[in-house]
Length: 331
Image 1: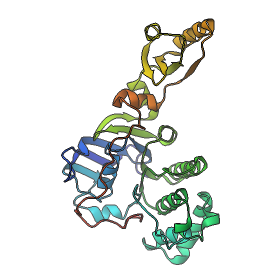
Image 2: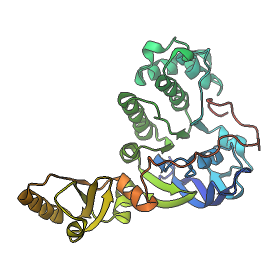
Image 3: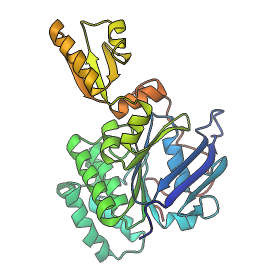
């Protein structure tokens, strides 16, 4: 196996400007993604995540700059790249007249598997993603969360080196999300896959990511593993939330203090957090002490929470090249 330090995706000075927009969706972005592991693009709607994935999967041409996947140029070698990747697109939809078994088997047969080979791989995955009981139900009769699981299954069943999942767990309940997480971790650890995903969920990014990048307005604001990103961009490891009994001026003497809704939030060390706790106990004031999170980093870098979404990135573009059918694996 090739070394994990080798880059599987390399973007250099990448720019994408949609024809109907004057604002770049991607603006001079340079990013390298290592082979092996799970890499997460974290950002609000409109940050440039989906545009990055669509260029990497050869669905869009960049306006300028370069991107290479497996060392192959996305502009010059799209067919060679497509044979080695699979994608769950954010805007994908399953075919309503097919059931879950048909979708998963079809994604394999499109890549050359026989019906028997496809069926043999389909059954275990139906069980893994808890689709066994609805395997023969037409997708038009299924909930949005179950349809989303079908699309994810169509991607992860393929024996490809590199998988892209764009907001894969939107619409899934907590149990469904955990099943997808477990399978992605298994594919990484047992099969050595490289997985690139985008998400709005901070807990998902923190739980899954070997490395991540926070992007906003087409720029990379921070990159590294979750621990590194938190330490570099917030510094203190502990936060203290206070709802009453202290003023902003008082808390500022303990560390950097911000307003977070109805709370006052202090970023500080464990030792100073203990001092605040003793003073709060003396004043009989409730407080909450917890580790700094990726959400704190995001607010620090972007200036607002990830839930404060901007306008979504365009998903329709005058055709620049033939695109794969929506919701299907790439061939």
